[in-house]
Image (tube, rainbow, N blue to C red; front, side, top):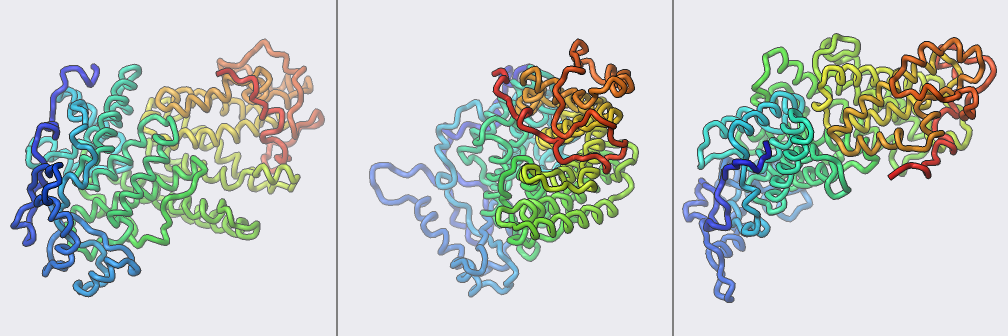
Length: 588
């Protein structure tokens, strides 16, 4: 059913309502901050203008600035670091130097929104209740447990209560419905639902409809589930928006000593570390700078108690596993962030890069040793979360250890142990993706899975160019299976379809050499030995091709094949060569 069918309005359109502030409390709010639209005829400022102009004065004049509880209706003001002028002035009034978040009055609504009266009525519509219930259930069952952007108990409590004075965030609701549609629906219904919910959420987001900036951070993170399209609307963009909004709130600072209520403190802490996760993974996937420098933050490490209330729809064992995933994924992403800055930093010299690699390997080894049994590699498959954890680890391992184009062009010797790490990581990644695919759970993966699979495919394409027929056959089998997984991911992610075309729509020679890699099997003996395995590798194999006439790829030989040990292979030239970079014949 289309979300536009039999839709019901859940909030009045503000174009038809007088402007007013949200409910507020506290000693400074007795005067109230309700207001009407100011006159455009040049008359004296109304009460709303006065409140706005006196906002800083009132905030700094609070007698109870250290004790006033930051709760609903009270605005959070982050005073910045010690060189901030606001910080300097507050320190003359406040007693606790460790507090950076202080209460203040809500600003008049017209100063915090953008053309609120121009928001289309469609943004305030929802599909019938059963559809909303279904999509929310799917979101909280499959996505939120491993990435608790939304506090399930709080949000669903508000949703079920249907209290007009305490509704759930409409912005977050529209964004969560989009993710729920991604997880649970099939094409073409899924595409229509996602586009509709994204459009509605973005209209509310652009108009700054929400009072609570926490909801803006949550919604921006959820918007990363929209299909990758342009630089202005992809996951890197939305993570950047979320991070900047969080910085404005001061989420990167420890809010423990502040007067925020405990529930808000837990939500902020969770959101901050989820931001760190998203920032690290998206930067690694896109090859773009990090938005967060952990040296600028002092938020304590995430603990199990911080996840209270975030996951409510699972049994206790599943909750424990989801929490284990969140904690160890956060640790892994902190390593990724360090690697991106130190190993791949623009100003890092050769020695610094080598030191960063050794440090990263040591940290990754320690991280593996600390994994609980349920998350260790080789344990029985239990959830997509454990699979995603090791896929992220394998992706990082390959990116750390595969030879760079500069290394290849300088004919520098590639360390055998590096290539062994890459080969093992690619095999592990391919196996995990295959398991999730066969369980029909690929829709539970976010967009970073596409980049990880791309990394694995490039590695497997290199392994198909070695001279040992057994290794080639194994690589072909894994590559073809990984390509099938990519086709399945392309049903959900546009960028997966784009990457798929790189392999499927290239010229005939590139397709033959890249996908099948039989150029290494030039001798009759080698071809005969591996033929049975090759024929069963994939239904997509072009069986009519004459592989004996295929031009050898760089780094292959017609002489004695290498042994079956990856460490004995000359990996120096098995990656992309000039012939394989000729994509001039790709179709549109």
